[in-house]
Length: 217
Image 1 (cartoon, rainbow, N blue to C red):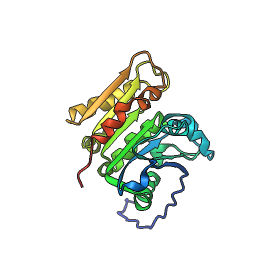
Image 2 (tube, rainbow, N blue to C red):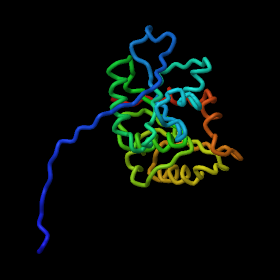
Image 3 (cartoon, rainbow, N blue to C red):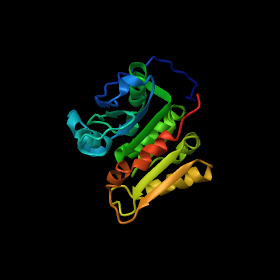
Image 4 (cartoon, rainbow, N blue to C red):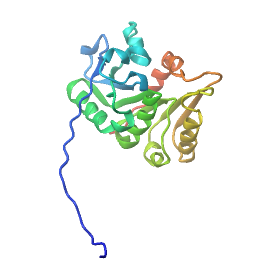
């Protein structure tokens, strides 16, 4: 019997359920609009113990008492999933943050490390119109993301001795973006293994760079 052309229509409902740390600047009430950073953690911090998210990166610095001129949201990925699979939920979280807090929608930034670096590439490529700049750390993406990502200023970080996520993962993305005419920077840490995030998040220039970018609505 020959094949026949068919079509299928259905309504699919998806429930987003992400726990997250929220940081508000000390003088939050003095401004009507604040820049927002979404931070995505690595593979080892997945689960339902939110304290795990404080192990690295921005949540670690905030837990230690550091202050930032940003609203910072640090969600936790479910143990059964990975950030690239959670982009719809992350986008719903971004909607929630904008609806609930004094977010400057022209200055929304995205960053993450390791699995969160992959999540940064995937989330930004799915919703490029939402971000003013992104900073993926020791992650990687796919060739199909290039056209969407080329519109977003990007600063990529990686250690050249990384045994977990080889630096070629970042090199390929940077090369594709450069060829597409994107605004992309690449910082390589000589002799550094997988932990290329500590030096990155301790660098004040990263936050100045974020603030130098504003998306036009």
